Image 1 (cartoon, rainbow, N blue to C red):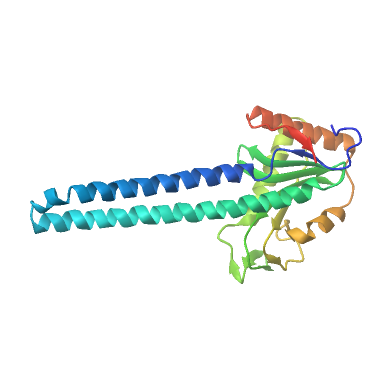
Image 2 (cartoon, rainbow, N blue to C red; image 1 turned 120 degrees about the horizontal axis):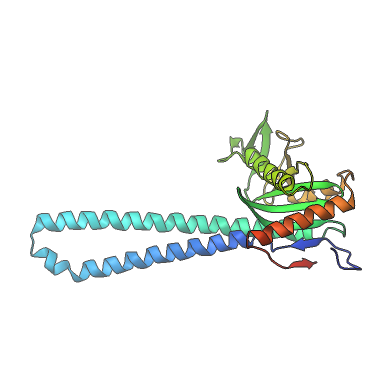
Length: 253
């Protein structure tokens, strides 16, 4: 599948494209909320004289309801804006990891933004070293592990990233089985792009890696899978994306 003479990994899709679309949708939602808010204020100010004729009680009731509505709409806009900023950071993180994976040598196949029946997988790496599902996290702080619990700055994360990583890995295993390719379980990896990762072991079977340590981690993996099988696996993944209607041209970086 690789172009003759290529010295770099074969890459499919564009890293971070799914998160970028989510970010754009949330910014539009925030903008719409603000527009509705300002239109409401304008209409309320125009009808102020009419409301005044109804007396003080009516003014208080209407004004109170209006202020509550303004606050609710403002809070909603703030939440949407905050989520959009988080999405932007997530997209940048995926792009950073994507650029790094794109610099891998020939023989690696990298799929970004892979859509499955269970959700989106940030990156999949296939080579003679096996299959990796790579989840990218843009969280800051110090990432550590206490027993089997992943923590940031001493506190548990808001989600169980380990469970999520295994769900992504099993979704690829099931896909390969359904297509008669093989019965292999990918190795899940979580990459933190901005955190100080102090985890030195697998957490419930999942590798936890900082972005600066990712190249060395990949280089240290043993070779155990045939080139023929790795090619069959990537053919299956690319054709599946086409089936889901979300295929992007492959490119050599």
